[in-house]
Structures are given as structure tokens and as C-alpha cells.
Image (cartoon, rainbow, N blue to C red; front, side, top):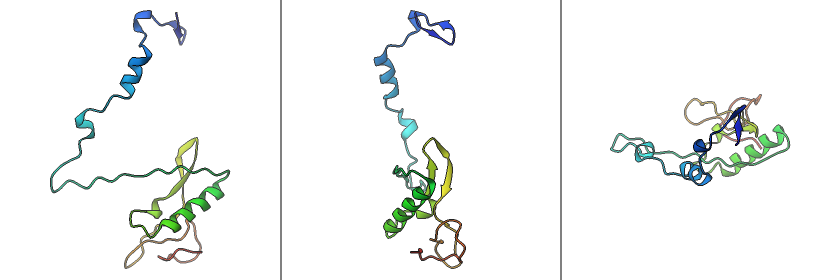
Length: 124
């Protein structure tokens, strides 16, 4: 008989592995995945999480900034919201781009924490 936190697990309470897998991979109920419909419903947005690794924070920020700059011509890329986090602490994020709203139109495309005035043109 197995034990959990010092107490034996009765044989009748054990869940067979195939039932656990069926629960984990069961489709969500329709209400859980149904999107609002109609003219007033916002268009769904999906965020792409592209994991890339680096040995240190500076290298990760450099790589993320290079990706933002190289893909910046795509309107779907929101470089200003790009962040970097430690693999084991995804809730602690380091911003890559400034993303301040500029007078007129657009957002700052320089690195976060830059000393020069904000501009819509990325730095080299």
C-alpha cells in the first residue's frame, strides 16, 4: 500500500494511469472555449511564446532586441511588449524595449532604460 504524507492510500482511491491521462487530455467543455460572437465581439488575439535561451540576462536581452528589430516590419509583432525572464522565474520579467507612447503617433523603439530621447527609430 502506498502512502501520502504519512497516510496510506486505500486501494479503492487509486486512479489508474489511463484515467489520469484521459482527464488531463480531455477536451474542454464548449462553454470554456467558446468565443463571444456577434458584431461587438472583439477579434481573438493569440500570443506566440517563442522560448530562446541564453547564459545570462544581457545576452537574452540582446537576442530579444535583435529579434524585435529584425521582425519589426511585421505589424503583428509588438516589440514594445517583449520581455525576458529567468527560466525558473517567469513571473519576474525584464522589459527589452522602452515602448513609451510618443506625441503624434507611434511608440519608442529604443532599448528599455535608454538615456537619449525617445524615438520611433530603433538604435543600431
